[in-house]
Length: 220
Image (cartoon, rainbow, N blue to C red; front, side, top):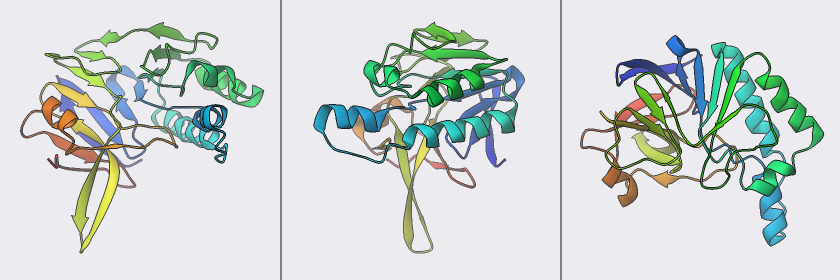
């Protein structure tokens, strides 16, 4: 398993190439913005038909990360579903899949702006959660410290061998860490966007996802 290790607020963390965050000491795996059921929500609201495979693809990657890390705790950092109705539209197979992933471990749903947390599914439901030196919430808060959040779906570009590669990324500075979107059908906001530049301190890093996670100065 290829990872990029770093220390944040005194916690030794690993950025996985999939976009998940691993905290080995706590046995914790964190994923943000799964947006499960996005194809169903788009079809329901606009009639546009997308291949309905994103939920299975996302759950497959999540299952692989849980097995690879041996996580005893899984924290879904908001916008786990594309809207509340999408959570109710899961197939029986998908519900059983999530139930199987939850078995034998602590599972925490943090509420997002797209969903309040899938109350019909098992696990804990929190507005935010503090574990040791870290506070986990969906949207970054002003003046926070030791904060881990999601919401913005950050991505960044790297130029190599005459071509540009754009990937989802983690954004990291001394006070906050923003996770990339984990879901298969999620777009992204470039790190140069004013919303992200105003949040992240000078000297912030972007950790690009992919087969070999790579840290670069945050493109601004």
